[in-house]
Image (cartoon, rainbow over all chains, first blue to last red; front, side, top):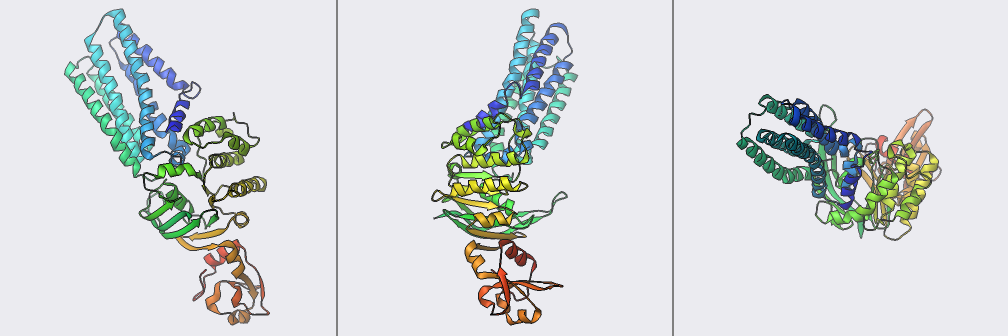
Length: 202
Length: 291
């Protein structure tokens, strides 16, 4: 397990994940600009979609692209540990996105003053990422990373488009529901993906 | 004790638009500790599938595989994998990783990791070079170096020498010989280069179209089988039940037969593993013998 986690850590090196860092910084800057100057969240949602898609692609398909997923099964780790490791890696990447969104929103609010609608908007965006990635984890475990990635991207696109159509119209209850849904789906995704991956032929 | 026991393993892949259907039919054999077994067979015979099943990369539909005394579907198998070294038949390391990165990963994955052996096996390869820029020979060497460097008791190698020049192949065979010098270390190696297997193996298992045709001690098999070169009349003298396969050409008849069935006067030559495989696969003979 330590070996796998170290392998994940290697993919965090700036030379390996340069584009990822650029996207996350861009996301934060746009979110800040959006919070201070504009009511249009399209750019933020667009970058967020890219972050989610590259996260899905990076983590879920990394092993399959190089046959590394087959090789690591022969190392002294169980399939459960492999899936757990993938979840940990994804969670670390997700944390980057959340930090970028939250810090830029806090900075924007400090500049302009607190805006409840914006907080609700950020919470919903974060929930969408969690749901998209959790579902894509389960689909990847059953059908492979490519299909998992497409599924995750489809969910993010649908969710982001519907968020943009009704921007600032969300009640607080909606954000609460989204968070609860995200937490439940994430909690379910770990045992479900472990079970599906355990039976899979690689 | 057996290092590997395969009992009635069955696996079927359904026919799809992209791939032909395939069945591995009730394969059973065992590899005694301290021995080297060569797995031979034509392309698509099921060698790689069998190796995948042994390593736990694919799941069998039926049967049982015991590796170093542990069933490979049990939870304990995770710990048994510390004593297994595996080389797959395709490149399997991320292209951005260097040999140094692999060393650092494996140091954390295996408790018995020995980086001195790892770097010694890599020889002159620049350890800061990315795997993606390796030559074919270097790419083949890296997984072998990993498999050799954690004090494994069983090596499972799927075509480790395929596509390599004779010098690199010879180096790899030397490494395998070196590995088996220590007692109780076993190797299962699949290859199409039968001359390599003839040098390295104690046992030969032949799989054809998903069926195990034979699994025999190599020296024993080479001792008891001969290639007979004769005419039709002379062949008829030999007991048909002792002839494994016959091939007819314009120049005469060649047959693979048991040495004790060949009577004096008939010209015969020593059989090679390649002869045995070809005659078993192609020289079908009605009422003929099986190995």
